[in-house]
Amino acid sequence: MTTMLKVEGINVYYGAIHAIKGISLEVNEGEIVTLIGANGAGKSTILKTISGLLRPKTGQIHFMGENITSVAPHKILKKGLAHVPEGRRIFLQMTVQENLDMGAYTCPAGDVKTELERVYDLFPRLLERRNQIAGTLSGGEQQMLAIGRALMSRPKLLMLDEPSMGLAPILVEQIFNIIQEMNKAGTTILLVEQNAQMALSIADRAYVLETGTIPISGTGKELAASDEIRKAYLGG
Amino acid sequence: MTFLSFLISGLSLGSVYAIIALGYTMVYGIAKMLNFAHGDVIMVGAYVCFFATTRGNMPALVGVLLAMVVCTILGVVIERLAYKPLRAATSLAVLITAIGVSYFLQNAALLLWSSNPKVFTSVVGNETIKLFDGRLNISVIAIVTIIICLIIMAALTLFIGKTKMGKAMRACSEDKDAAQLMGIDVNFTISITFAIGSALAAVAGVLLCSAYPTLMPTTGAMPGIKAFTAAVLGGIGSVPGAMVGGILLGIIEIFGKGYISTQLSDAIVFAVLILTLLIKPTGLLGKQINEKV
Image 1 (cartoon, rainbow over the protein chains, first blue to last red):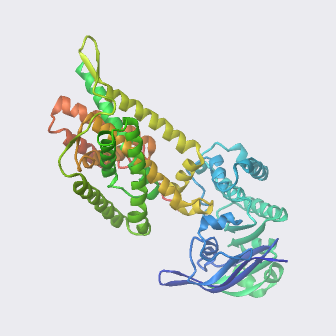
Image 2 (cartoon, rainbow over the protein chains, first blue to last red):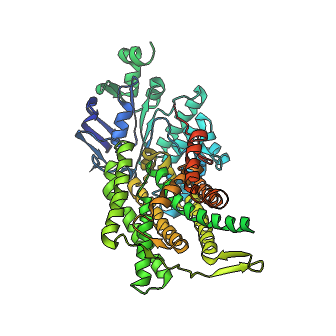
Image 3 (cartoon, chains in turn orange, red):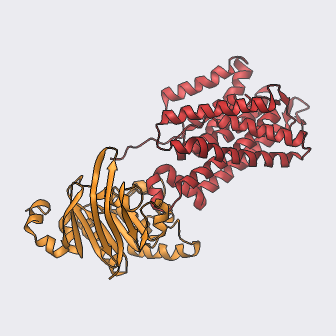
């Protein structure tokens, strides 16, 4: 098992606020790793720092053995690390198809068609709505588009930030099934979730984040069984 | 007959405003800043074409192409040196910087080329077409200006709608962080936008001075500010808006000159700006800004 992503002792600040306090975590090839924790604990901040949108003050981030700590976000994507940001952030004024085209921005023109077919296979709903303006999609469809768009770059590691947010339970289940399918097809997953129960049920390993630090980590099963975690995050 | 003649002059002047307004609106759309130095890039373009054709004895078309190249470089350099370091600054800081760049360009032109007006020779000659037994005179430059404007509009619409770079520009203008996560180099995209806007400014400068042949360091200032008005009228940030706004403003200005008063025509143009801001601040085709929760 090779380490794909290695985050070592990163400290991230928003102005004077010390948001992330010396966090380290690892994701191995082929795993589903989840990062759970309360609102405001810094989960999204960690993902943004990994994908280059934020810079850590100290600490290092390695991806596939390469130091990416100060690499620009658009170059990090090219190395095979895609990030579905919090709140989906699809291009609301562009069509579904154009959003997917943007996801394939770094693909050689010849490969775009294959990727497009793969994503439309995974999300037939998007194929039906390919010429629709993305802003008019339902919440679930927008989430599918956000994930599909990230898949267009054929990432080795896909980071998902709260893919279940604002979705009906049946859609949440669907999205989680798709995450597992993508993982089986060879994509390593780093999943940030508020829905800890769901996340732990599919994760190989998990980290629990508490206001900028990671006090607990373990396998998904261990954490789901732990009393402490149950009380704090799983509602009893 | 005068109505028709005014309409054609208005369309022609409006075409120039539209070409300039496209630069304003594209830059605003992507960099969220008002580049008030844009008008002065027009002036530089006109000077380059003037010197290329008079001192350099180059054919008019070569002069225009040279002006486009020089302005493209100028636009990209201005963005890199003056605006890029302010990417994270407040919009007021960027606005003041843009006004500073505008004064810098005007005064640099004053030093280089003096305040003496140059008489610009039209790139297509000064012929007029006489219609209806000479009752309607249309200058060739007016027709050429309108045709070039239509070509630019069509080309730009295709570019923004269909090409990969055009789509990347739209993506950046909507959400820069998300665009970066797609692998789009936002800084490069902004540079391309400035390059296109500045090349268009060069074309506008040549067309403007072909119709109104007095060329001075301040030549670009007034058309620049009027094109800004046109961009606001159409809806700043909207490319079709800039086209519609530019054409409309040109027609309003010429009709104002012809039917109301020559002296009041500028006041009428800027009254349009004030009225737009009062009645429909998003402009005719501007998008309502939806705050996402």
